[in-house]
Image (tube, rainbow, N blue to C red; front, side):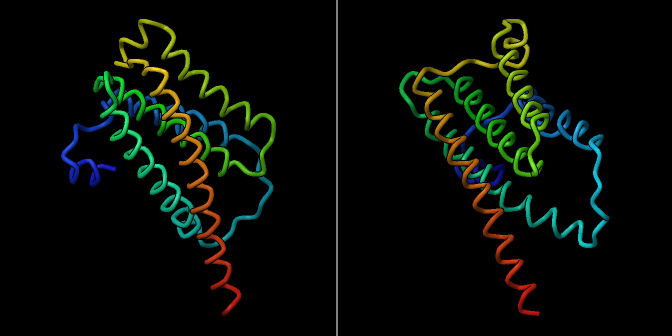
Length: 177
């Protein structure tokens, strides 16, 4: 994402405060609870390879879709830079929550509830004026919201497809040996 922004010469789509929200709600808090969950699977070799096979395609899809969304909404009539940044924040967080659900499989009600509570927590930051001001969030217009929703659907689906394709390629290589 940073490389694309640099090549495009655009203002960076996130303030450090936005990255705090994204990291807290899509990685930090969920990771804490997922780490505490009981796990009866045996330890397997190849941890780093499995992590990279998942994170590289999913992260690439999330970053690319967020970049495209940011560049589109930044150019919409009447859209301020703060609204475009908020849209990018919502998009990356939304895709991050989809990725959270992908890595949490098999899904259980509490895992879905965890992702929903993270989305609700971000919603609270948007709804409470003092938090919205502190995090420098500016709700986009209806058109901006629709772009964000579409980008989360595309990015979430793209992340899922990228991971599935990469896994099938890896399985095919394993079957050939």
